[in-house]
Length: 479
Image (cartoon, rainbow, N blue to C red; front, side, top):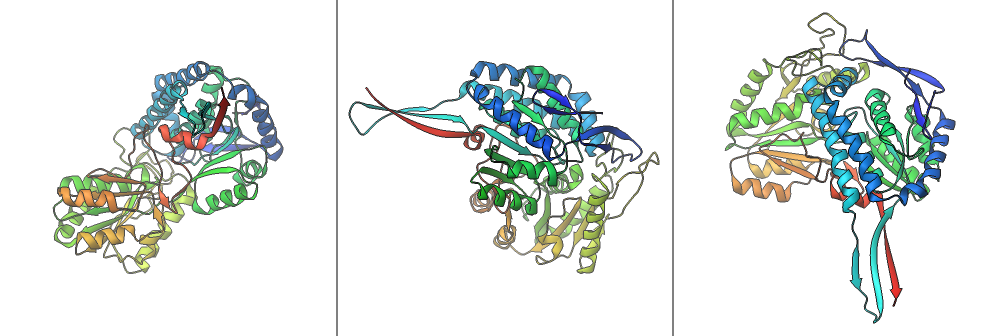
């Protein structure tokens, strides 16, 4: 049984949860402690006690610990990738790639600990010096999702620690294994007791305790829009800092002048890989009429070669959906699309078992055509391998439809026109734009985040992470 980490000690939970492999539901990955509200408060108390000393620790101390953690993550990429694929259902190559990303994130922020800088400026008053410096926020609560079980915890946790904050982290219930492995690595890397606390448990219990506790100075959350709004309301009520990464209904435009092979690969990757369970996935493909029929035919042909199977099996392109509830939601949207009059051009069927006969949460990726913008499948985030195609007449119409959404995380286009690519990058209402690339694929050393209903607060990742995990102090000195 895997325990919670509170105040530098491994602690049994108030209850236990079984971590199930979605590729084979007979396989139990492990039993993980579930904290109650009292244990969550104990973790917060430990973080508060550790915060002053850690906030004044040297950049070298923070560098050494983060760098050591990054090195171990990279050295164990095959092992940790196998664990990730087993508990979340991401294919093994994707899972190993995510682990490598997590290791690189820790390496990057180890360097940021040493690169922390400020400003020395001249005052408007003679004889007065002005210094602008950054200090840690204090105790930071991290609430992470199930779709990237190690990368998203890493890109929140590494900068929080690099800039001198103490942390209480609650991972998603469905994927405690990767978070526990990360906690174990950091614990052995030499973090002082209480600087990092892992509390696995229900969001309604552990998460709520973090939201309500005045000792938690900031909350960084990635998850659903509904929960994100609850986080915001709770933080505003007690004037705590908060950062939200929520939903997306990301568009991918295909213009007549696009390279057909590039457009098909981008659309299939964006919409179906990782079983469509990415906030940056493109579920709306907006295609101009000159290339529409060729594009749809090519995508349908490409889909015939997609292999849906056990996430850890060689040759698998798409693993299972994460759990039974998510599978039911995906299939419900397939039924909704049919009911709205869209044409199911390919897929959309529950499989139930993999090629070895093991029970799992499998479905074939679904492609809808003959859709209209107002359909629910074009308006609501499905978070599964369900993609719809919208036919348009021109680039201008495509761009208008792409922006006609309450979300604004990622937006992509396939085109060989420099004119249209340049215009798109400036006018797409999204935090990230991609030209001739899948929307689901971002680097770890540059900002991540969206606009409108997708994100709130400073960007995550890269040097921009300092905006959330630090507070600015301006100091004046009379010589």
